[in-house]
Image (cartoon, rainbow, N blue to C red):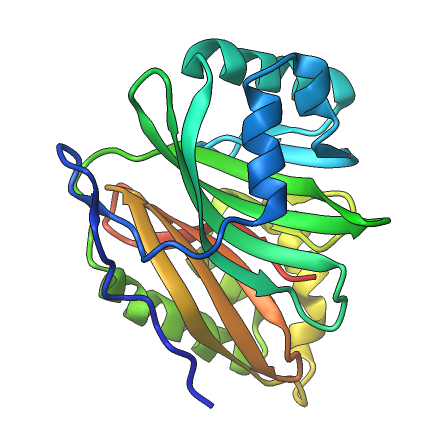
Length: 254
């Protein structure tokens, strides 16, 4: 069944930025506890994250070590001066592993800046913990979500032509990141090796977006559904290149 697309984004979120966000969902408990912890001590915020969490900034730089993650969170607390108006925008079970969840959310900092985040969370015991997260300020005039159609179709075409090397070299950024619940795979060469299974002539895959959220002039979040040889959800973070092409900065399937 074709998923309902959130391409028609409702409600102007940042009046000077041209950013529009989808209608809000009920606030997830993980986002409520994140907001409360963010506004207290770093130790409280630290407990919202999985011990092996990975933080990513909009350029693709990753913070995977305990020292780097803690420093990144301390700097966010300092820069934002606290947060308010946290919203869950899109939330999807990742697939067969029901203890993983994909999400797009937003919040406003006390510095008067609006932010969006894409999140992979994992249920540990009775609590979801933040496992992978990219937080991005909402700014600039954003493109239409339909701008990705040709690039997504190219992804599907090259995948189904069983040419992982061409797929990664043409559709992924040089510093691309691939996350599949194990150490982050970094760079085209490493992702090409990871995607070698696509070279099997029996492998087929189609991508169907569920939600597409342009958040900056050159950055778009996408959550969607795979079908074919793999039938679970995916996350793609698309980045605009200097030549006008959109490429995948971050790719995740669990």
